[in-house]
Image 1: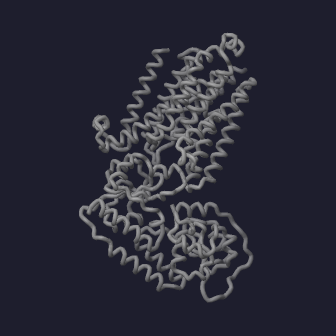
Image 2: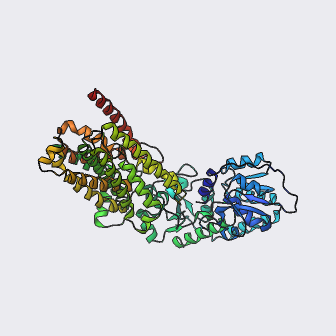
Image 3: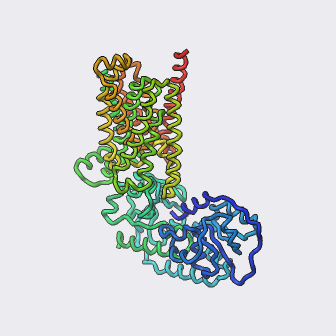
Length: 280
Length: 327
């Protein structure tokens, strides 16, 4: 859900004008973020005093893993005008979101660092390293990566054959081959059925295909307290009730594997624990 | 007429069977039915009971509602272009259902969803009848429908944009085009009772409809109360269309096309047209829903796309014929 909300944030963007250019000289870098994934890295890596602002989405515990931290810093709504007025030395933005704001900030000579959507753990580590370097705290980035690698190393060992799993996202989307979620499933010792059923990274499956594939685990990737929508209603369809009754339905909030950060290791740990329940 | 009804009923049943047999995964229907009847919770039984049967039942019930309401509105307004979709009743029902669903009322009180659709459909039908009562021409009725449709569509889009879920704004297509994809028995349980009440109310007006073809004064002198007939149709249309739209979105053109296809077979007896229009509406909707699943698009086409592809040309031909008659 986090990614979608961030997408909405960018769609809601307007433009603004800011005449004054040039940041005041000071010791630390003042950094603003226009993207929820940027918010999470910024709040985890930088000193609080260096954070100019993060998006308002970072304060929503449904989508954010840093909601508590975000309450201690100012928030923006992704508008060029407000971010420019903070005179940041660097702005973290998503490569696919807030395009108009990003373009506006570039015209105003505000340095912008674009974050892509990582599609593997390798790309996740590279992104953490790059952001930490730009923030001037490479050692904190290195520690975060080392902690994550250690957490992945210490996952309970896989069994053979690996239990099968299918990720079900709102609207029937799944996590297919070559996605970050696919790699995390594999690391958690699960066999991602969608990698076989769906040709693309973000395939869409019908409930009938999902039920017929007979996965050992169905991983519901939606917030339980999400506001009503048809997309989320699909996750509560009665056809999935037998899975819930047999304890083979795992709920994994999307915030745990939407962005680069230590929460990915927590996602893998929860999945591995669920795997041990169905295949001890 | 009995033979036609029987034929259409058999066609509807056959299409329901095809609908149940059809799905994205290969499927042993006989085994599934056996498991379901024996209460064995197998995969086949689950798919049949929770996914395929609800879809077929809803397709038939929604189609029956739309066909029946179309015939009733055309008879009551004595206007060949009256149809829940064209005159804005479906659009208003969608608005009511959207408000009930996205702002959380239906998660507190499940019946709020069909009731929301019912209120929207009821208000718009009553408004249209007030217009039609003062002897509105076809043009006035259609223009009122255009106004109601665009107002309801705009307000639906506004409501979805203001809704707290980030997915809401993308789901406007469902409400404007309609779909039977991934519906469940819960939807059937919510909508079917209201639809059934609506059917009874509308079908009770059959003889009054026939009398109305002789003019309102004659109908009244024959002992039919116009007031009662209007109330029955407004209430029935609101219940049928409101409940249909609340679970399947606004599926267009079914109520418009079906009575016109059947009128030559029935003769100009609007009372008789009611049941057969309902049955043919069910068959048309099921057929369109089968087609939607046979066309290999992902995600599957919305049902309203197919009914519009069939309905819009018929609508244009009708308009042309009406103009020629007028000249």
